[in-house]
Amino acid sequence: MRFDVLTLFPGIFESYLRQSLLEDAIQAGLVQVHAWNIRDWTLDKHQRVDDRPFGGGPGMVLMAQPVVDCVAAVRAKAEPPGKLVMLTPAGERLTQRTVEKLAREPRLLLLCGRYEGFDDRIRQSLDPWEVSVGDFVCNGGEVPAMVVIDSVIRLIPGVLGDQQSAADESHSEEGRLEYPQYTRPRVFQGLEVPEILLGGNHQAVAKWRREQSDLRTRARHAQGEQGAQNEQNKTPKTEST
Ligand code: SAM
Image (cartoon, rainbow, N blue to C red; front, side, top):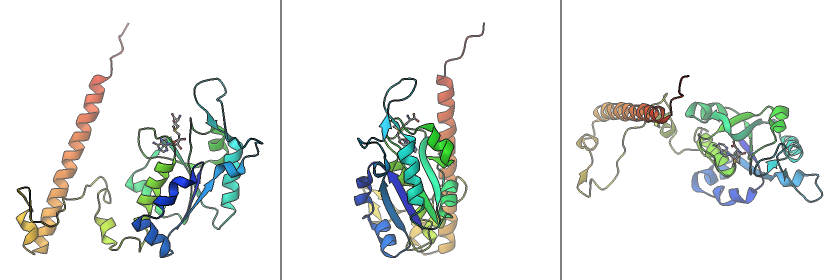
């Protein structure tokens, strides 16, 4: 699978690409990652890629020309042209289902914004798949792009040592969280590994894990519902006239 990252800060990816699992996947020829500097496509004589927003307001907006030209040029560098993903807090929230869909694509172009974000005509003209990594705002799309790469490559056959790891993981089944894991030592600060994991009875272990996974999943959902309820209670009621 091939990723092309379109960014104003390609250097951010240098050490990331050398981390263990991703580096191994690249070495094994399972994954390719190319980072491109959007600034290389600006036609502005001062190499600018951003400008003040029409209508006023703070910050700078990424101009359409360098981004649209960069996307066209990068698409033309390989086959297939690839699916364009725009990283934006306004996008579809990244979930394991979205990750599964993204992992079916042979090539993804990950478009990273900066400053106040993109001139909206980039979206109108390129019709990208808009993806958000969560309901918060990062300084740029680079960390969100790494989140996409990191989560997607886990689903590419051969990337994980044991493909079962991805199948068993949290969220691999709708909303389900993984059971608690333990390793040596058997006792740490007086906390013991559950006896059932030490007995070698695989069926009993599988049953225990399923139960623990259910408990965790229910507890998390209850937490989520409680959080939503608290938020609702905080929202000031509008006075009726
Ligand atoms: N002014 C924009 C807004 O309010 O939606 C935020 C711009 S943000 C500071 C700059 C860039 O970071 C965005 O264009 C986007 O590429 C990236 N970014 C920030 N938060 C993100 C998120 N939650 N998911 C994906 N990308 C994000």
